Length: 489
Image (tube, rainbow, N blue to C red; front, top):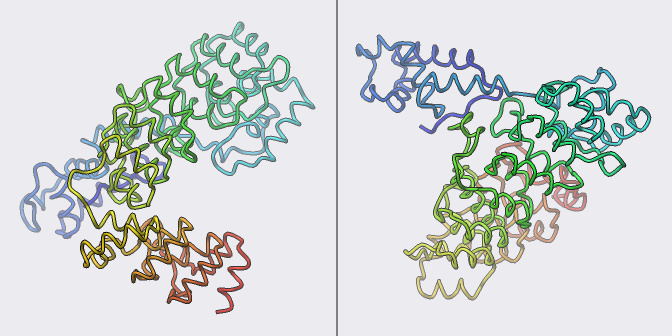
């Protein structure tokens, strides 16, 4: 039985109720409850219905099982984690709209990662153009605007305000600065200089919050590198020099959309992959990855996405090449090399091979699947000649390979696998169990959609998450020509 995820915005009463329910069911001899106790209680691995251990199963025992099932060593450790969640949980995207003018400026000016609209930034800019005094109305507004003189005045009058929570999001001033999207190039404006004043006055460079109680945290470092600041690297370097930890899980997630290694190189300069993970890891473990797990996960993502530059930076630093990162189910428990090979990502596979990641034991089936993904007919035929049964074994091992190829818009790979006998209706396991036709429709590839239908793809099959047919996927992504074709079948 795998560990259970905590609910969104978890609280102690939810978990107490879970424990009470488990106690009641275990005493009643419910098989699933007893199985859970056997797996997660260190001293009751032999418990069974009707025994003294079952009929006297205590609330303390149930709380221990509940904690361990959620990944915590004990109930007190779980409670401590929930205390941290309660302390740092925020919902900035749910801030009320009926606010004082300075707070309204803050609501409009800062990214909240929930319904952010470019129009809000325009309104925030118009607001301070019409009422320049708003950037002096509070230390939080001065921080968001990057008003250097106003910040200096505030700190001269009230130095402790550098760490005071306030405004519509209950953030410290440094967080309003970090998540502000306001242009700071006007005279007298500089987020970097304003941040320097705050840090000199005692602001916490590791300031952050938990978005609706969820880990990992949105830190000031994440904000300055993702909110469109005019000098993001300089501002991030300032935070790192003052003590922000480079092992920032949310930041690594946010910058994971390209092969650009600039931010990654900056983080390595300040200790990415080393140390104890900083204050947020201490607060949130085990629901926060260690530094070693973070860099393993980055290597896995680089391999999966064929980002050779990022992979090259990572393997030039200490990393377990066979590590499994945070074990996200989308990666199917595979190493970076396996993912690179399976996805036909030749460039990053070469980087990993040079670093010594290739397993010592050959895996012809994996190589066959990778050759299929690359549409490398020569390699496919070479492997089939060496082992005529390899096609069937490879298809049985990963029947979803054709769906993966369609998702990645690799028409030539889809054609090759169809010719080899892959089932065109085999669903991809993660995340939605969609078929190749779903992927082709979502990508708007009419030629691939026609090809798949002509070779037996069923346009009536639904994915498991949205219960939508390929037609629904085409309509959702506004591919009218594909939708018209599928709608006419």
